[in-house]
Length: 386
Image 1 (cartoon, helix red, strand yellow):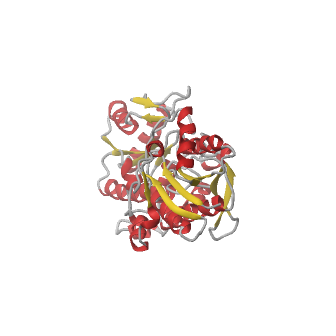
Image 2 (cartoon, rainbow, N blue to C red; image 1 turned 90 degrees about the horizontal axis):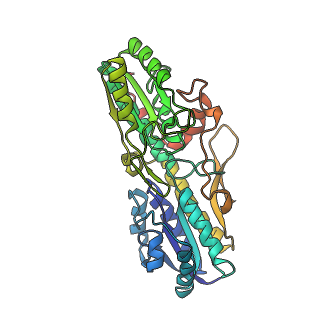
Image 3 (spheres, rainbow, N blue to C red; image 1 turned 45 degrees about the vertical axis):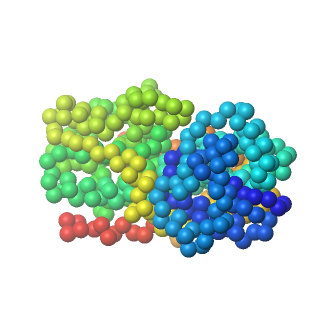
């Protein structure tokens, strides 16, 4: 099926979203069926505006820069689409002879991908999703590109903060990790540990109701023992009634802008326990960091982009590229194609087997699952203090 290909980014960027774009363009160049490789400049709204750039004209050496470029090289958005917008998109595709549409994004973007697929009907346009999220909350797939790099960042950052607190053990440091309803990223901070007893000393996840009294008890016991305590919490912590520990500042669609959970808990420690405490909130630093980009994450992101192109050219549509872990001692994954309706706005949270009984830490099983995703060993961060 001869025609043009269009790739669009949706939602928040990651450290490897451009690596998937690299995979798309380099693979597309290999197929005679694909003429132009359009990028929607600025997310889904760019489709309606027909703001396209042909990346097939970019030379290979310049394309390689995508592998080390933070954010989204072609822009992205959280534009709220209406039903009529999808109908308009189909006309745009036809007008520009676009036969292949690739949507790179998270849960919300996969919902968009599914709706584009349905709108296209029998128009002869193949639509394929490419997973992307630092939250790792896309259903079915073992994990999603973007998570491994963000996990590496939080593990490395907590490791360095831990050295600071260990050398001046006079306070509690509460570090806040992103993750709306899923605690994958906060849980990944456990990889900062080199040995038993290392920080983070406590990890609190949105999958378990947050108990304020238990939290303060845990902190007090560790402070009395160590003097310096490092706590990692997810931005999406909820109480036993399912309400956010700190009410959101405001919400636009699915995008929730939380208050500072870490600041709230640090203040709680100061007021209730009389212990010096401070909070840290890396926020988008973690999803933008190329310095801590995981080599495994980058390579899998490229594969995801290339696999999406192959699937579309082979006539597959209404699917998302996913990863399935192959059992064995050595980490290995294979790509799979997942029906798009199985991932549209479906959130994958941390399973019970990955959370300890008290709900203030993760299990060894989680650490073994997560460790390969952050790439090359973090042992370079081992210091004289270890």
